[in-house]
Length: 282
Ligand code: C2E
Ligand code: MG
Ligand code: MG
Ligand code: MG
Image 1 (cartoon, rainbow, N blue to C red):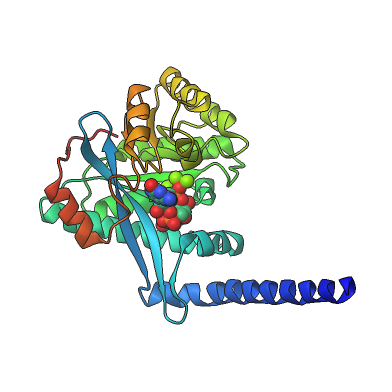
Image 2 (image 1 turned 120 degrees about the vertical axis):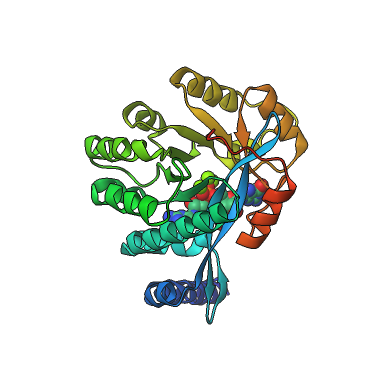
């Protein structure tokens, strides 16, 4: 009895495992053609100043319209692309998409900023600086209109080279956001050793801010103040979280309370309808 149900579990496990591996193989095989066939689309989620409140920029978040599997979440394919190294090509493709979009918006009089998520693997060669510089030239980007987000989960091995790269980006006004702050192992070491400009408090901390303050959020905010870094809180879903963060001195935020990530046309409409701030801020 126990034995057969055990076997059933193994069969169930094997099936689930096989499905997962199949999906990973699909992702790996289809990513290249996906780039070529323009299957990737960027959505844009507004980032707000919590005081005024005004839209100050957008975070670009990728969506994959897979021909057979439908809409695939970045939570699924980004880790696979990281594993296989395909993330390098994908990120460069998406950076170009974001730059094109910024140019199109600039032409329509929408002067905004976009942050793009990139793998920390790019911080291992000065070619990355050249690539970003080229984007600024090709799309006539306003200083500071394109910035970058990295998570600390991807370990940067050569910190002095990474520092050189970040410094090389600064003349264009490119800021470096440290994403999912507080969830990795080395956050404090990174803050100390890399010239980061902004930290993003991870949603998991904001989630805990429902009825009372959270000492960890206080600690992150006071750390940011003493290092002179701006802070964006991610995943704000209710007004209480907004009010608490604002009261604690967090300047910026994003989350479903204000808006989900939007397709470019909707992001444009959103920007027109809401108060926004055009001066470089973040
Ligand atoms: P992230 O950069 O930390 O992005 C925040 C994620 O939280 C996004 O999920 C966003 O849609 C979601 N989010 C924002 N506000 C709320 C909220 O109020 N409630 C909830 N429940 N969720 C919220 P998404 O778009 O699925 O992206 C997941 C992760 O995939 C991102 O986390 C980022 O690490 C990665 N990613 C997304 N786009 C790209 C990309 O273009 N390139 C790279 N390398 N990674 C990307
Ligand atoms: Mg991000
Ligand atoms: Mg984040
Ligand atoms: Mg996060």
